[in-house]
Length: 186
Image 1: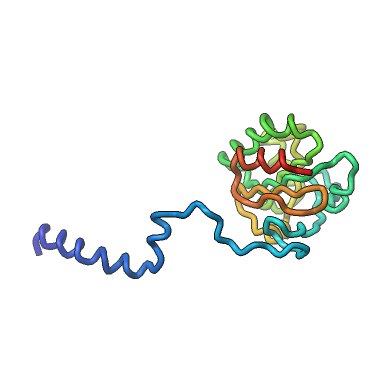
Image 2 (image 1 turned 90 degrees about the vertical axis):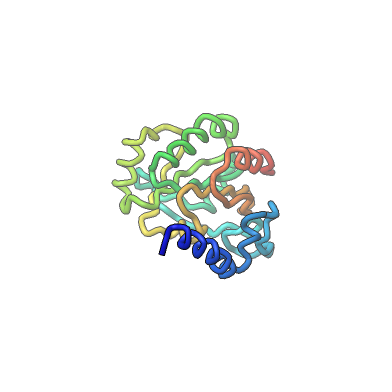
């Protein structure tokens, strides 16, 4: 079979392969609207509008941090959870938060949720070796990925929780979206 025939066969098979991707045309022309089902207010879960699942994790120094206790603090307007793997992309996001958001939102607690280190001591080593000691982030060691699973997190997931415990943002890190969510905190 010559190359011209192979090319024609390939061109004839493309529509067949694409037809098997039902609904694929929606991906090529996105609507730019969120089609997720609205979260039911008053329920606990990871979605925007839901009550944030409570948790307790050790920080990198071995001190327990409980979300509900942090939110009960009088000087706290909200919490940011950033799920990190200590990769270059995470460093870019965290460095941006350190320079852009942390200074202008002093009543918001910023937590770097380390879900890859596996031990509190390893999370501390990652914090130190990546230059985040004293950065404005409190590093939480999610050694068995409890919080990662509670919030349906992944690398770069950024969650904003207001003082009342309502999730205001849960999505991949975007500087402008984070700033907007923090600015709108009650």
